Length: 104
Image (cartoon, rainbow, N blue to C red; front, side, top):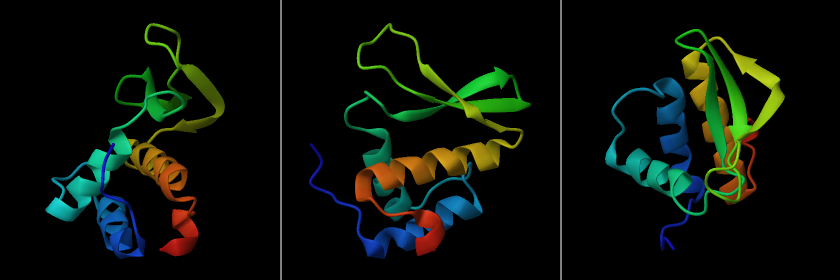
């Protein structure tokens, strides 16, 4: 379990991710990403490739490895940047209870 917790001071790192979700993160953003990407896998939001380099969907990881990913059909993306941002926002909300769209 991580000792690090996301606080309002980390909103600047969320803004950094929003500006360039595929870029090289600074140390503060990397710390946030490590927390959001680590921990229990069950229920974690992930991107699902629907058509390589063109379409992405949203899924949630199962409780047990080897089980199918739950596909969330209501969301589909044609921009990898927007898809990555959506997953970041959902994981942030899971960890903090805070809606990033309102906080930024």
